[in-house]
Structure formats: C-alpha cells, structure tokens
Length: 316
Ligand SMILES: Cc1cc2nc3c(=O)[nH]c(=O)nc-3n(C[C@H](O)[C@H](O)[C@H](O)COP(=O)(O)OP(=O)(O)OC[C@H]3O[C@@H](n4cnc5c(N)ncnc54)[C@H](O)[C@@H]3O)c2cc1C
Image (cartoon, rainbow, N blue to C red; front, side):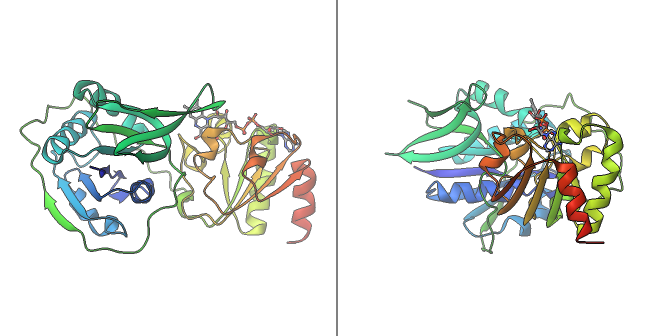
C-alpha cells in the first residue's frame, strides 16, 4: 500500500502553506491515495483550503483546543493511524511537529525520519532522503519491517499543491485517547507587522550588513524598489528587525515570493528552507563560495553597500 496521511498545520485559524507542500510531495511520491487530516477544535473550517489537486479525502479530528497542543495532537495522529493504517504519515518539519512527532514515532514503534527532502516508493517500501553531518552527506533511509512510517518533511522543498478537488470529508472522534495537556497556549503578541509569507518581492539582509545602523539603508532600499524587507536569523536574533521578518526554518517560508534578493546572506540550509523554492533568486555576496550562489538564478560577487548605492540611483 502506498497510501499517505498528511497532517495539515494551521496557526491562528490560517492554514500554514507548508501543508500544501506536503500534499504536493505525497502526490509526487506516487501515493495511491492522499488523506489530509485537520486536527483542532475549529480545524474543519479549513476544509476548503486543503481541497486542492491530489487530495482524495479529508478527515477532521476535533480536539478540546483550537490551538496546537502537542499531547492532543499526538493522540489525534495515533487515533488516525489506528483507524486508517496509512503506510506513510507526513508532518511538516516545524516547531509544532518537533513537539510531538519523535514521541509519536517512539511510542508507536513506527519507522521514523526527520527533515526529509526526498521521498520514494521502491517495491512497496518507503525510502526517504535526509541530510547528515551538516548537509555534507545525503542519506537514503529505509524502514525494514515497518508497516507505518512517520516523517517530518522539510519546508520549501516542494511547490505547494494548487488547483481544486472535491475530496470526501469525514470526522474522527479521538477523544477516547486524548490525554489532558501539559501545555498552556499563550497567544503571541500582535506585531502589527507585514506578513512576509504573502510578499511577492523580498529584499532580505543578512550578517553582511555588519551593524544595526546599516539596517535603515536597506530598509530605504526595499521601499525604493518596492520590496518587502526580510532577514536571516542573526539579524532577528540581534533584535535589528522583528522576528516576523525572519526567513527560514525557524522563521517563515516566503510562500508567495517570485523574486528574492539576498544581500549579505551566506545561504545556510536553515535560511534556504524558507526561500529556495523561489524561481528568481538574486544573491549578492563578497564570497564566491557562498552557498547562496548554488540556488541563485543570478549572482553578484560584490559588496552589498556598493550594489545598494548603485541600485538606489535607478529608483530615485
Ligand atoms: C535549529 C536552527 C534553526 C535556524 N533557523 C534559521 C532561520 O530560520 N533562518 C536563518 O536565516 N537562519 C537560521 N538558522 C541559522 C543558520 O544556521 C545561519 O547561522 C544563518 O542563516 C546565517 O545567517 P547569515 O547568512 O546572515 O550570516 P552568515 O552565515 O554570517 O553570512 C553572512 C554573509 O555575508 C557575506 N558578506 C559579509 N560582508 C559582505 C558585504 N559587505 N557584501 C556582501 N556580502 C557580505 C559573507 O560572505 C557571508 O556569506 C538556524 C539555525 C539552527 C541551528
């Protein structure tokens, strides 16, 4: 069987775009059927958002909490696996999944792999690809003797599924297995900031800007060229820009982006997780060996301050 269960992820009532990437990955992996699970008190509201091409069925699993709770989510996925016996369960490789997927894999004795960016079915067995030794080695992993395999899938690897479908919708009652949660959900403070996941043109800055005083120059450049300002993690960690501007694995995926200008960003795998799907990446870096050039359509080996000065003159 090559039937796949995709666990959709949502936050504050919105479907996270990575859910659609997982659906695309499931389809590409040659699933005989793709079932999407919507877990949460109000998750059924997202039925329309996941009714995209390639989805055969949607199962809603109501929980006591509307917001993510690792204990409840784990119980819900266990109930789904017990009810549907999927051969592969796909979750986003996200902070939510990190909160319960390893425990799910261990207690269920399922095959398990994290941060997967390649999925194949070879003779009815799942074989997945993940990196080892800081991305120096790509390893193929199989799961002998496991009838169910659970994987967390790297964001930004597959293009989000599009189109529409009319999947069957059903509901699963997982309340019998739900444990009371040990986690309290605290509403994140509203930042009032832009949503970079919806920006079509991003200008992102990294540690190459050297110091906080230089942020202003690139903020003005972004305004001048009509881009949304983003950043790598060190810039957000230093408090030079809000966390909501951070692109990457522990930041955001710039899902709608069509043009990404990376200034003084080395191109770590964690940064790439949020942007490498973009069709048009332009990178500026003084280091010709910087990883960002391996995914850039256009690369400039040069100084970002000189390029910024030159660029802005064309928009004055
Ligand atoms: C669990 C985990 C999650 C993470 N999540 C994220 C994430 O979501 N997003 C993220 O970005 N990182 C994330 N990171 C951090 C990541 O590993 C890198 O440390 C980070 O992306 C590096 O940021 P950078 O490219 O700005 O800095 P650096 O790697 O220091 O690169 C700076 C670049 O600027 C270039 N440069 C310097 N001066 C100039 C100049 N004048 N002109 C042109 N180029 C110049 C340099 O050649 C260099 O390539 C995460 C790490 C971990 C462990």
